[in-house]
Length: 160
Image 1 (cartoon, one colour):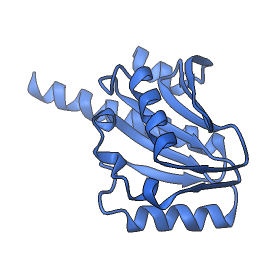
Image 2 (tube, helix red, strand yellow):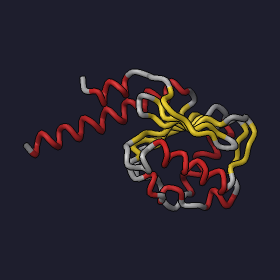
Image 3 (tube, helix red, strand yellow):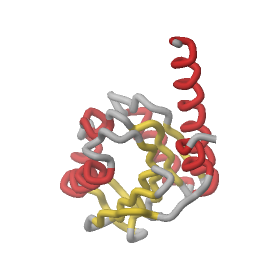
Image 4 (cartoon, one colour):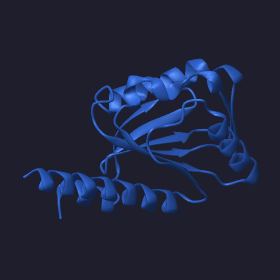
């Protein structure tokens, strides 16, 4: 088993993190970037969104390192209109993002998140999905990353 697959399949602890006003953005040993909001009630504005982007940049070598993202929002979190309109997926820090899993624990969050992604003009260029548990979200991320590695291995084998 390659180190890449081994790191994906076995959960590890956080190796580094950056704290913003509303969240803790961590890079786990398994390579997953995790955003965990510190409060159940909050509102993300453009400034906070940019702080989170800066945290990604620090934890992913300015977006050069491939990563998957796990988001654990608070129960009553919101995003301002200006932050929603910002085309965040155009930022260079996202160029090597491989998957996005968002843990949604309530119906209103699921409705808002589904609406957000359906109305977004520029959708992420990587797989993204909503989950009702962290465990299921992490399993899905690992499956996505394993699939990407298998595809890459097959591609390089065909070139040889």
